[in-house]
Length: 291
Image (tube, rainbow, N blue to C red; front, side, top):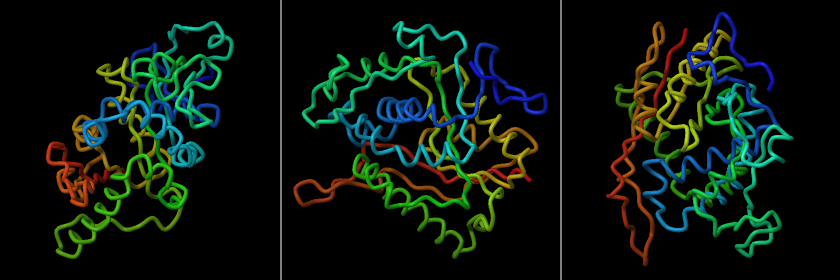
């Protein structure tokens, strides 16, 4: 396994068996799988908003999130936690250092396409078992100066229709707070290396509650500060992630820019808008000041 990204000036806060490493193109498929599976299994938002056909939607997110994950990996500021004691389930996985055995149903018939998996008929537990690689947690980021191409996010929007609505609501709420004089001043990035945009904080289900998310988040804060970034912006959708980013280690400080409630949104059913009243999740936009 390659050397970790940690240094004497920014050591890892995690137990020795775990290594923090910068993600590269070779980790793209693994990262997409963790992002899709974690969001569709244990998020307080997505499985509650879209409770049916979750494995099929998970595979749709896996396909749709390709550009977003690729953009962040190419930024050089996306990192993952690797388990150095990972026990491979298949011999072929060990020979390549890890493998993903998901069948994303390339022919669209809902069945497997040659590797023995069941495509969209798999359960979430089966999909987790097919993630036979040592990457167990990710924190993806990109430089805010390198804006996303929104048109290339359409496949993800198709898989999660609420996602673009949340983005638009955050922007509108932030502008409204600023106009009212109650918002946090958030000047846009004018060059690379100023603002780090965090997106996708995910840990695979069998590695939760080990402190990996918090440890990696604190490490990323220090790494970004060491590289000269002035602040980090993040829109967490899980209370545990909100708590970590609203309580950064000194000397960093955090502030809530604005927030949106999932209950404000809904979907059209039978010609009427049915709001997600059952999803009691408030999502803030958080700014962590580093410099």
